[in-house]
Image 1 (cartoon, one colour):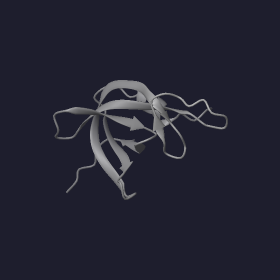
Image 2 (cartoon, helix red, strand yellow):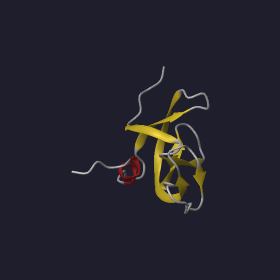
Image 3 (tube, rainbow, N blue to C red):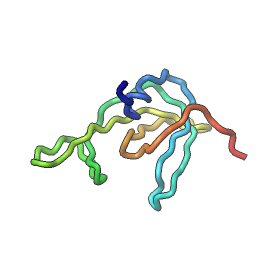
Image 4 (cartoon, rainbow, N blue to C red):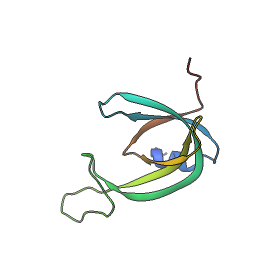
Amino acid sequence: MKALTPAENIKALPAGTKVTLITHSIFGKPVESQVTTMGEIRQHGYYTPGGGWGLYPCRLPGYQNIECWEVAVRERRKRNPFWIKIGYTLKGYRLGWEDKP
């Protein structure tokens, strides 16, 4: 059985699912955010394994384009939703929230 990518896993989640997202800060430290999925996911640009991102694919020999997906989420205790890029910004996730002290 083929392993699912994070984008495929998040696509399968219904709207309103509570998820803890794991991203990296600008200093490389893991940061956890408690969010609720809004149910909308779209393909938005391409990124490279080295960290570059572009809206259109690059057609150079030996250049690897990876589709970048983004999902609409709303952070816990916040009003406005925002888009987060899966695979580029998002490094991992787990279902549910753990209460912070």
